[in-house]
Image (cartoon, rainbow, N blue to C red):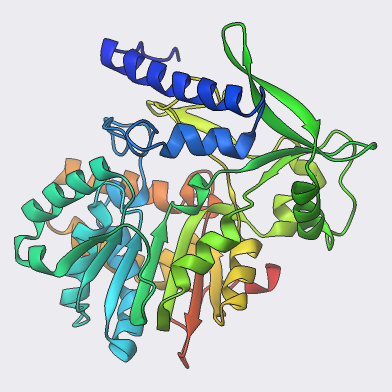
Length: 389
């Protein structure tokens, strides 16, 4: 399907982002590492995709996350979180709350389970998204207004409870890598005649060393010409997120794979892509600042970062198996009971998108990291894939 045309405001916004990137390319001598380009177009204050004011989530945005599909997702997740909150008490910290839909459904579900957190704390770098989240939560949960905080960064002082990162790690800037017989190459961005162009150069010593460490234990060497990506900042990002969490657990939910599958020779080309108005594309230079850029998550990197911070891998499974183990059938029946025939059909379609292998069911994984807990939270009883990490 053809992409929809840009409005005048959208064209002007993207032009400002392009100018910002061009200026940095010039200052850097004509070439930027791909991760820096991705960081600029996604996170430049007031300009980047996640910082500017365009709607990103839901039917009117560029993509739909699980919480926007149906409240059943949050209610199942709540069953897993409630088991930990019953032991630890404390807070819920959500990294990157998107539209606020997860918080709006999760808090009533936790309350119904007798596991209300002391506070709900949202780590959100986008001022625009904060305002959208405030408006939604004020409308949906007016009684919680005084118990919801917005933070610029994860809490560094000691706290306990649970942390959630739903579709956050996939937006971390990545380096795009190409394996060559003569040495590893990394992609960068240079200015072209009509915008930007991808330019490959020998990988910097730091990038080459980091990628060698990632792939050292793969069962077979990667073939010449193989293209993939990795997020150099993923481990440090998670370490910062977990720094203050003393006793409790963190749930990381995203599309991704264990490292041995992620960097398998058959996955040549990598997983990097963009989304614009619900159309998937592979052009990193399509409407800079207006198009989401993303890559699948290497869950082994996140597990290793958690272990380095003193956490344990409590469980790792597919989203379909996680939801099945946290009462999907019961929550579906409860939600469907109050709907008419058309509403039940829409609910069935939404749940199918959450669990079918060709949709989110197999592509999305759930990783739980815990510290100071004796029991594994619900969600990993049907099929725990932790041994694949």
